[in-house]
Image 1 (cartoon, helix red, strand yellow):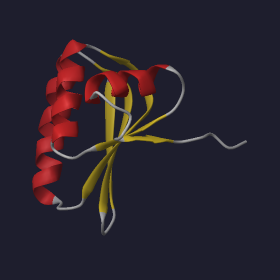
Image 2 (cartoon, one colour; image 1 turned 90 degrees about the horizontal axis):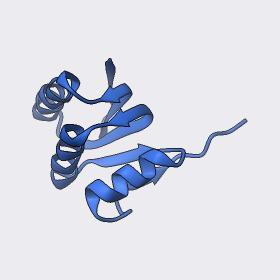
Image 3 (cartoon, rainbow, N blue to C red; image 1 turned 45 degrees about the vertical axis):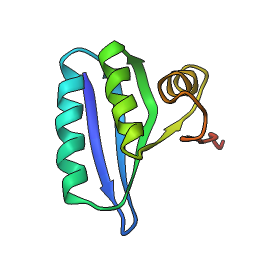
Image 4 (tube, one colour; image 1 turned 135 degrees about the vertical axis):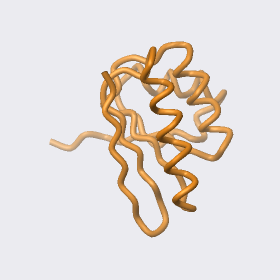
Amino acid sequence: MLRITLQRTDLDLVMKLEGCVSGPWVGELDACWRRATTQHDGHLMVDLRSVCHVDAGGRVLMARMHEAGASFMTSGCVMPEVVREVTGSSVSIVPVSKRT
């Protein structure tokens, strides 16, 4: 299952993902991303902090999102590595520390 929440500001569009970016949810995310970016001219930030798994199709979609200018918010050990693999660098990663 994948939950997609959009938050729009004057400059940015934040797409918060929760769950698994895999299987049929990749197509749903792709459709949501395309709709959202045609309706908003701001920079896209993809929040991956609540994503537990990304399959091969999800990685391909993330690469397309990166090529279109998206940045990714990550935390933990796994998602930063997935983003580095998908983007080929750490340039588009926005690490977010947890505050207690």
